[in-house]
Image 1 (cartoon, rainbow, N blue to C red):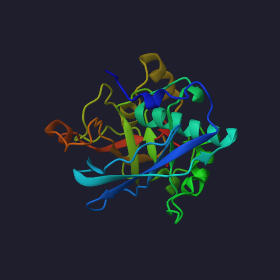
Image 2: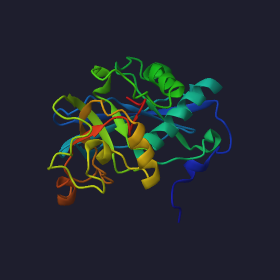
Image 3: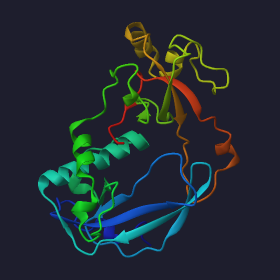
Length: 262
């Protein structure tokens, strides 16, 4: 018996000069809370056609996943492969809190963002791919948090805790009624440190916390954010335990990282 198809092991150990694209699109039964786009899965060999299937996003919104394999191979340069590799490893790090040795010759697949405006020519993989975002992520490990406090650039971002993979957020708004030194609102789930919103957001070690809290900016804005649920199975509707998670939260941006992935 095989733990996975042998296709994934073919050509591993080499840097490919061509890849095959499979466009993964999402068709929700009703509008999702945030804008979404298609994902491109790039593999060393062409994947077979797959039937569509259903996943459940947001508050159990039924969403059909449709895949479309591109017939022609995508010929890529070493620079383009570097962009794709950086983006793939960044997804693992920022979204899944997984850090791997960046050895693209060992990757069985790459992940890329699709253009927001779908190309009419589905056979042209390069025109389907958002190379501008790939370049941005390649050039920026993260977006600096030293943005102007009132800047809208802090809103609609994916941010994550570099120390604890349980805490990933979508920023929603700046709350001018709260300050970093204020205690966390009473409805928030309890954490180890509850003295202030700044302390609540921070999840470093005891020694690191003291140094950070002594030099951080206590005048920065407090952000209203949505906590991303730690769901592992999107094929089923949420369990009662998952539904009970309070997703509305208030944090300070400085202890977190702003992902360059939009």
